[in-house]
Length: 633
Image 1: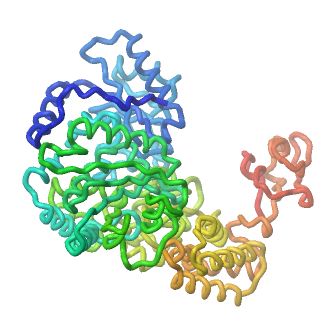
Image 2 (image 1 turned 60 degrees about the vertical axis):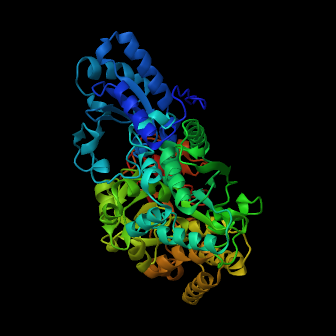
């Protein structure tokens, strides 16, 4: 992994005014050759895991060895996650936008020779559209990027997150300068209110209204006020917050500093989950560099405004994403939620007014200040303005991180940006909102993706998780899976959540084994409604969503398990049998060699058989069979 210096040498003195920041930006831009080509190598977590540091190092050595003319030697820049995680490591050439995917060190020599010296693309490294088979040369023509509207993510993939000069050159901290040079705290709050910005962490509460409530409470009870960035992203398959903190940490810091100015806060905290070491590292570097330039700490930009930020690492508890549990954790107590009201805007951290916003929410603030409330409110739909970042995962061709305007339909996200479901399988459902979200059937693909529309169909926006499922997924098993996660993550403080989730999980387990009755299904529905109404916090209150939504839209699958002892998705082990189609089997013996139970017999080049009494139903034979002769009955 690339070693990042936390002591980047900033030759300039501490910036003493907003005008000094503008002059500093001009000096950075003046030193840079706008015509110099740049090769971007993604160093997001996904690409780091697939060898991108070695790709970047090999590129540097190969370019030097090629003896290119000095005036055309490209700059090698490493950036945060570009979002197209299933295609990494990614290498992009600027300014043309030439896009290479799944690049490995052994590809570098051909890249240098063919692209840098001969000026031609390496065809085998180009993205191939799964639906048309077309080789696409430029990133802006790839559907995954073409149909997005990247606002919060606009700089990620272009800047080095460990170099504040890159951020400033791209316009970072200009909104902070605008605020400190000529806006009152009241004006800042009014702009955020008018923009209609809602919290991106799942609750969807209007950010400006929350800020105003805190200010009013401070007036009633003078004293400290705190701001918190919630980066405790715990949803399975979600990586929106991680990508933002890793790839553009200064966007989060700038938003929090602006919010602190509006609220009169002097201390802020960013709460980051333990499993995000690169995010912590980049945030730490960003905080240190911002302090060095006078953008954070004492007397920010010479205006007399003091504000600083500390990083707190969560211990991996999902429930600490809930704001009162997060506050308890920040104070050094067990991360358990408490009854509201009072809300944190009235009594939060150390019983003082506290504003907790998701880091994506904070990342929107600088652009709202820069371009205006009406500009932001003009995107999306009236009650869900702006854009939203989603992690698009599961049974979809283009897995990754996408940013789209609020109100776009589910179908457009999955089919146009995601490229649809792989192979010949049919799209079945999409779950939005993380483990507490609902499963929306493909028949509702025209549902707009906004806070209110998703709630109406039995799901939720959540923090932005989006899991695509196909016909091979069992919706009863899906509900059981998410309920098991939530049961394990429950703090156990309230009875409905502690005991109710356990009972619901047991009932689902019975259904997956073909047991139970329709009366039990009705009881499950009633229990889910009771837990939803009676739980202390949002974890318990939303935990029944996977169960309620699957009963609502996929009741026929529950009935198939209960009445017919079959699993339509062919997933539940107790209800399926593996067999080999003798007409398709070519006797390659691969299934027999891979079977861990020795349940498959046969001779080479002759059809094989599965001994059902020995079969443990692990599915290995089904996965490895090239002729697709293994069937699930």
